Image (cartoon, rainbow, N blue to C red):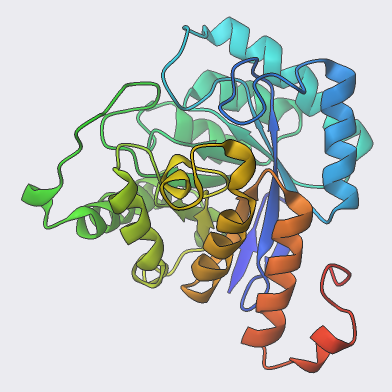
Length: 293
């Protein structure tokens, strides 16, 4: 399978999984709590992601969960200079994590090549903006919408959470195709923890092969998520190994892009799984894990 993350960035993900390094431009991220809000710290984190083996960046200026309002102007102020700085320093694809078409448009003019939309293309201007810039897109499932509390999600009427997510994503793939986005630039994401209970997120992770059956690269966004806290504990620092396990399980089920805070760990898991899936286990002994990119 080939995925194209904008012009000039084509990857064979038949066995190898890509690692997407998370770069938050928010002061209230659930994970770093604004630890990299200072611009110099943000750039140092980007440098670390590259050194640890990131294949692409994911830059977001508004967190997915509930919180203080972030206006479109504020989001633009956060992400556009960040993307310009990354484009000037690194030759990696850059995803903009936004659900606003206007932000996607400006971010792509600044150098982003992927529109990572957690709203499932709710903004009708989002896909046309991506098509104009010849960008790739990520269609993510969310039940109600980003930044809206959803404490009691129920998918019984839709045949269960896996069926509901698959139907939703299949529809969004059609939307992207109709907007002129080529096949190789369409990615899907189950949206773990977005309008799902911990059990639902775990069920979706186990059903990664079902979503891979849509014939699109599957992005796994499990890194340090709340549902892993049910397994590893509420302390965010205790979710490292659970995240690695989720990455491995997702890759075994067909996920080929890992959105990660811990790029080094994700890279090592991805490389080990690639060696196993390609029946090249000798590469592990040869020290290929974490080195082959």
